[in-house]
Amino acid sequence: MTGSCEMLRSFFFSMRFGYYNQKKGCFFSCFVDGFFVLFRDKVIRRKGFQKGRIIMKTAVIAIGGNAIIMEGQKGTIEEQFENVSKSCDHIIDLLEEGYNVVLTHGNGPHVGNSLIKGEAGKDLVPAYPMDACGAETQGLLGYVIKQSLMNRMKERGLTKKIASLVTQVEVYGTDPAFKNPTKPVGPFFTKEEADVLMAEKGYVMKEDSGRGYRRVVASPKPQEIIEKEAVKALAGLGYLVIAAGGGGIPVIKDVEDQYRGVEAVIDKDYASALLALEIDADLLVILTGVEQVAINFGKPTQENLSVMDVEAARKHMADGQFPAGSMGPKIDAALSFVEATGGEALITSMDQLKRAIKGETGTRIVKY
Ligand SMILES: Nc1ncnc2c1ncn2[C@@H]1O[C@H](COP(=O)(O)OP(=O)(O)O)[C@@H](O)[C@H]1O
Ligand SMILES: NC(=O)OP(=O)(O)O
Image 1 (cartoon, helix red, strand yellow):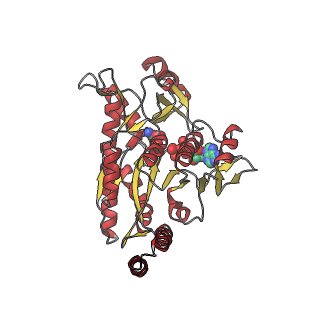
Image 2 (cartoon, protein in one colour):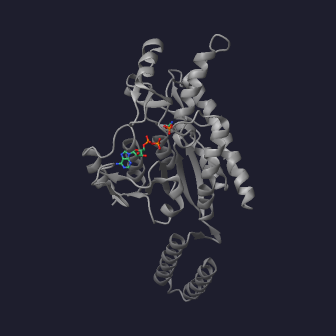
């Protein structure tokens, strides 16, 4: 197609050159050039080609931490490798569909576990603060995801460079979220266990979507992905990039304009939406436990949605269709990306990713 483009260009150029020679051609020259540019841009947009190379679409794909350590699991390293390995084919399928993939992931179960380990061992070795636990979990999960993908790709006879990037995310120290913890981390407890932890450790414990009680910590809104340029550059070089794990390591700028870690866990859906915006991604995919977003979720009148525009999403949100502790932040994050870029967000489950990308399932959130 680009070959035809270039032939047309040569043809028009020679016509234009002829007219120049006859000193008549200025108007015609502009007309021909304009036509060529319109034609070329249309081809590029439709086919994704530019000067003989394919322009890849970039998708930011967010995987929930609860898909890596599942409900009822202790979170052994073997369990995590097994869970992630099961997801690899779905991600690889997307690469084969021609997408540049930037993977982000949650770390809620992991960061809570790290805090418990620190607390339990603090008489022997120093406990880490929450930002350091976030960094630790980014490193661990980067390793688990990267190795699982590498091994599966090898089995499928594919090669793709993979980079896992330690990512800091700036938050504001004045964010009211620091005074109102909402982010569930770590394992699930019964009400009785939660009461003991609140009394003995001073934790804030809340019920998490009918699944039990979990510790909740501050979750300020992400303001800037510090390593965004590196993510964009690596994706542009054809790497599958794993970034902003656990929503990114939360940092603030102190009075001397220096970055400093803070005690918080950023929501990975908000961080993923911001990353998608900052690296000019075409698509934001939020993977969760359901194939489609629904209205009247869990009721006999449940209606699954294939497409939802911004206006409808806002209306359903105002009607209380998307609870704050579960689907609410995902819709909110999707809206922030769609409204700012005019791009699309897709919410679906990991096992339906390929079909959802083809438009066969999932819920697409679009501007109009
Ligand atoms: N309107 C809704 N449509 C679909 N799912 C919903 C809706 N409201 C609540 N949910 C629940 O929210 C869950 C997603 O939230 P959560 O489990 O907290 O996310 P994560 O996958 O990031 O851990 C879904 O799996 C579903 O059980
Ligand atoms: N950081 C974060 O959002 O983790 P989860 O996806 O595990 O909640």
